[in-house]
Image (cartoon, rainbow, N blue to C red):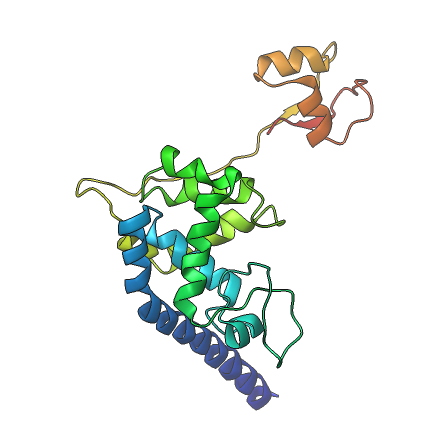
Length: 217
C-alpha cells in the first residue's frame, strides 16, 4: 500500500513539473514577440502571453497544434486533419497578430487602448472579459492568476518606481438580527441595499427572525 501511494505521489509530482516545464518553455518561445507587440500596439505583454497560455494550454491544445490558433478565435480554416470551427493560421505569430487586430477592430475592445496603460494588466483582463471575449465569469481572474504565477508582469513596460499593488483580502461580514430590526435599517447601517441583502442571503421576503444571521458582504 505504501509503495502504491508513493507511486501515485511521484506521478502527480512528475505531472505538475511537466506542466510547469511546458508553460515555461512556451513563455521563453513567445515572450520576445509579445514584447514587440506591446511596444507597437501598447497591449501588455503579460496579457498577450497569459491569454495565449490560457486559451492554448501553453500551445498543447488541438487547435494550437493543428491550426496554430493560440487565442481560441473562431473563423475559417482549410485544415483537413481536424474538423473545427476555429480559425487557422500559417504560423503562430499570425495568431498573435490576429488577437491584437481583434482588440483594435471590435468596438467593445478598442476603447481599452485609450483607457489603460501597457502595464495595467488587471484592467485589461477585466476589460477583455467584459467585452465578451469569454463566457466564463472567472476568465479574467484566471488570466491574472497566470500572470502572477509566472511573473509575466516583468515583461510589461512598467515605470521604474512602479510597485505591484497589494490586493485587499475579502472578509465576510455578518449581522445577528435583533428585536425591531428591519432590512431597510440594516442596509442603511452597512451602506448597502435591501435588494443586495435579499440576494446574498437568498431571502424571498423582508420578514426577519430575531437571532437570524445575515450576511452583509
